[in-house]
Amino acid sequence: MTTKTASIASVRSGLAASILALTIGVALLTVSGMAQATVLHDAAHDQRHAMAFPCH
Amino acid sequence: MTKNLLSSALFAGLIAGAVAALLQFVFVIPLLLEGELFEGGERLHFVIDGSPQSDRGSPGLGTEWGRHAMTVAFNLVTYTGYGLILGAIMSMAREMRGIALTAKSGIIWGLAGFVAVQLAPAVGLPPELPGTPAAELGPRQVWWVATILCTAVGLALIAFADKGIVQIVGGVLILLPHLFGAPHLDTYFGVAPPELSAEFAAISLGMAAIGWALLGYFTAYFLVRGEEA
Image 1: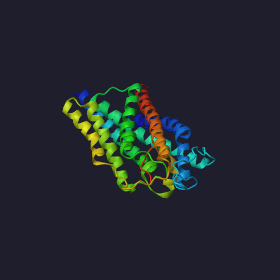
Image 2: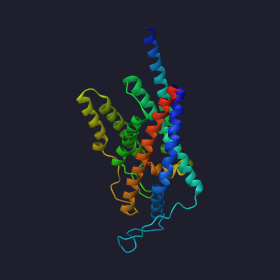
Image 3: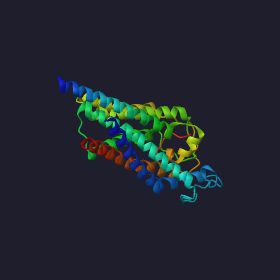
Image 4: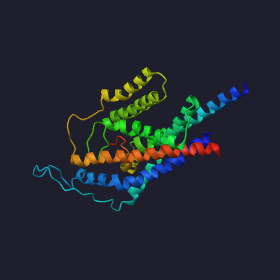
């Protein structure tokens, strides 16, 4: 019983960690690959082409 | 748990991003800068006398160090972002499906990431040289994201499903965005020689494959090591 509760709790905390990592990851990629603000676009330009993001 | 996942993805992203940037400077950026000569009109292809010949040769990396520093920086950001997502999915697969994780199996994860994030979208929207006019950005970004999601889910169904029918659904899901078709212009518009565009597309994909293999390896390596410590 205790073990089961503990393992469910560990899966939940694992899931929370994964969701947090996914969210930060998507945020970083929005900045480096998707956002069209001119300054960002120009700075990230060569990298976007090299990594095949849809760019301008 | 959270700290281990975030730090593993960060370390892996920094290593893979740094190596990927280095590879890009050797193989990819010189072609990109050569493409810019055509984009800016310093070199012309097929224009002056209708001749299909134009000079080959990259201008080299030049001296725009600020620009190249930004390329390194954004590679680190991009690979860290992909590392966080890859690490999150690895962790979930392990906890929910009991999929064992080792540094070596991380390479397979990384290559699956390459297929989903680089190769599948590139089938519809090949990596573009600067100066390649393309359809409007919005619809291309939507198609790009949708293709990545379909391919990733399709690969997961094929890898982890117990029933054959589910694996077939996974395969159909991977094909779906290509049957739908990527947004394209109804005219050919490119100003760069087709050979240069093709070389750029192929070599940028090849280098990204190395980057993703490293990302998968190191994300798994740090994840596993952090738990043992």
